[in-house]
Length: 203
Length: 152
Image 1 (cartoon, rainbow over the protein chains, first blue to last red):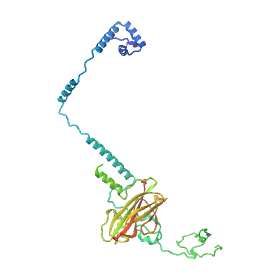
Image 2 (cartoon, rainbow over the protein chains, first blue to last red):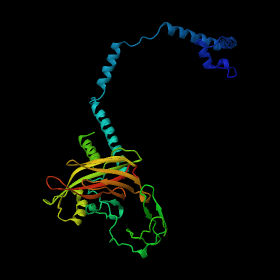
Image 3 (cartoon, rainbow over the protein chains, first blue to last red):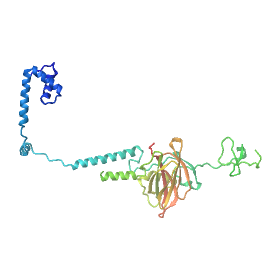
Image 4 (tube, each protein chain N blue to C red):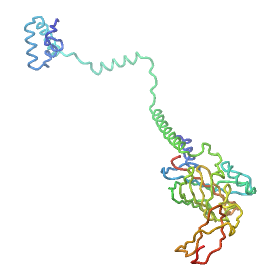
């Protein structure tokens, strides 16, 4: 079929749509006008219409179940020996094992990055170094229980003399109602012995 | 999970260094109760370091075994009580975080002892020999470790 490329009404797609009755009335009218001026095309379209009607009136028979069974048996006999079918449970088992491994790995890595336990369960528990612990206060009788640390006061207790201390100020505390001296500058021993001035008199 | 993997995970979480879940602001306190004896020379491999240090101050203790191990998460400023076995407990308070080198200030009260306040770095055990002895005349030693939960 020769088509006029300048006329969009003559394209094969449009003619096919015309034959199938899918064009709107205006488009169908344009195709009919074009066919009126192209006798060869109109004759071909008529032939197509006859084939279409014949096809619709005499549809080819579908193969029945028996035909399908025969074909299937022929296919099976022509194939080499079938491989045994894989059972499904190993796949499920593999998926389960994979999920378990993922959970285990997540737990292990989390512990690892949190600075968790030693890798070796029998690894000795690390003991702190003497320099890494400082005893701030404790009962003196408990000092022998310290293994790696030293009690807060280890040096001999030396009393300060009067010449070692100068009393700068004395304030009275409401609760104690006592006199507490503030120690002067310089190196000061832990225990201070200072002469107490009578109450009401400054140094 | 295979039985072997499950067993490994169980052991993993029960080790004294294992980390129970805790918030970032919390600290993880591990306490190990050790019993020392002069009746044998069996030393639990995990206690080799502690045994060595204890023997420096008193060589007569030749056998060391773990009686209890406990791990708890405590908030800063929180207190906890750790079972040591033989109806003895160790009270632990995480008092504050020191400014220097990420140290923590702790207060512990071992059996038959007064409070011991100390500052410590994280990750290693601080052992204390208590005066307590059990019915088999084994000496109770406690070891305390602190670790930040955030893995810092």
